[in-house]
Picture (cartoon, helix red, strand yellow):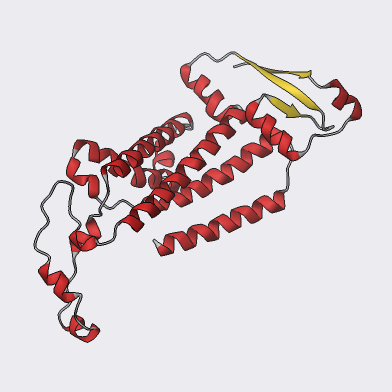
Length: 256
């Protein structure tokens, strides 16, 4: 495999002044154009000329090797994960009475005993405890919300399988037993099953665990940002951001 990178100076005035652009312009050019910065802080244009023979190698170039396209994918993945968490919060807020929750299209069974148990005192409930397992297993999820969550789950699952395929280096178990890959399957596979079995549309799915996948996307985004800019930018602030994200994930997971 041969790969060559040609640098062409596109802004001669900035080169002569040897002045680096502010960080906000660097980040904008990083997303919208193929620009980079050399060791002297000069703004240069980067063009990639590659000779990739297989389709897998071309995908690796776009998803992994090319820092700019990889960064765009990381940002999109981060937004998708945050959106799934927001939709989970919306589902919880809209689920006012889980007592009558049941599978999609199923008839609600008699819940009189559970309604009566809600009126008991704590001592009376301890004498005759009763658990509504339907309220734990099923949730009230509208068709529109299910459709949006299904689309996001299919996109996330496709990306996870594609990244695992591109990162395969002879040890399949290392890819399958990865913590984040298992977490991705747990939050996406149940939604795909609902396509084949509609009653599972109201199944409780721990979508809130996507906050940890969003945190991982944030870390990968910072790594791609460092590679593309060829130097560390505010490493301390980024570490503090990741630490804050970790604490936020712990709180969010505990609440959910």
